[in-house]
Image 1 (tube, rainbow, N blue to C red):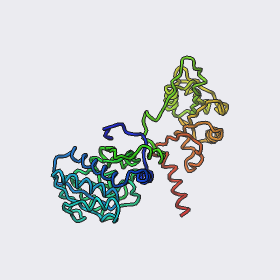
Image 2: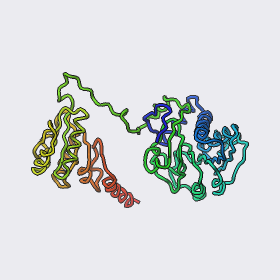
Image 3: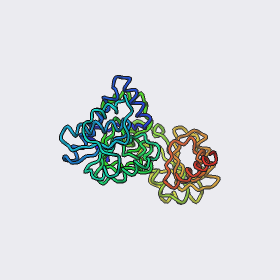
Image 4: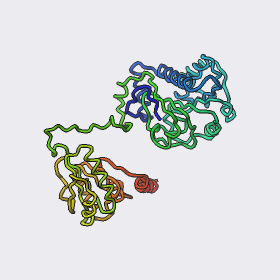
Length: 379
């Protein structure tokens, strides 16, 4: 769940992109210390909004994520909360995190499981989104010992912010406060199940910096898609021609794909049968206005404004494989689904040129197994 205190920008920042944004912000006159102070304030506000004053333990790592934790601890203590800090390691001297740690005057706890087991709220500021290796045993033991509700800073420690993978052990948070933009790990499984409610806080990072970084990943939603609004005078050929190449075994899937294309505004819709038997079955489930083309579908390759959906019930034979190769070679937009993905099992390079691929877990695993095998042989 994402807390929407204001519109959530669609861009996602990977850990590397976020690090670059921080560096560019510093050059543009927004120093790390100022961003860290704003992040710490956002964390403290999130704690106050969810709980009344109680024993809080803030777990701080040695990096800037830990610096956010030091700031939040100081602000909560100033308001009368009983706060203690357990630091995994001291921040690097001379940095913004070291400055934040130096301003802490409250109690410090040793880094051990007992310290967190007595807390009533834990603020997890150990690692940020950039974690890419398994957490060490000393960290895992402390994370495992947490019994109190956890508010995570940026991402729960142990979650890779770029992929959502859990690196050995992770703290499961009831809420996560992140900054500037969401990260892929907030949305991808299994990481999103560890984040709880995700709150995006504005800390003063300029939009111009985000634009300069040029994010390449986006949160999916209607705001990403701009469907055409045809005028009364628009001809059907101006609105594209979708061809759904389908076999006999999944006629319902072909019908769904055809209905979706019509709803999206396609001017023409053709369901291309890959065999005489498929043509007979597809005619039985066709919707009014659907064109059922007899085999072979090769004659439809190359038409202007044509988009292909390859896969529903597509048989794993040479004829279907040849169709896939010809359509991709023609450079026409292709949505590769189901049978088209099965045809490429063990050879994902064959799909190069496809515009969209829609694998379920089993189809995705077939390609991954091949990739892992290739990497193993190279190693």
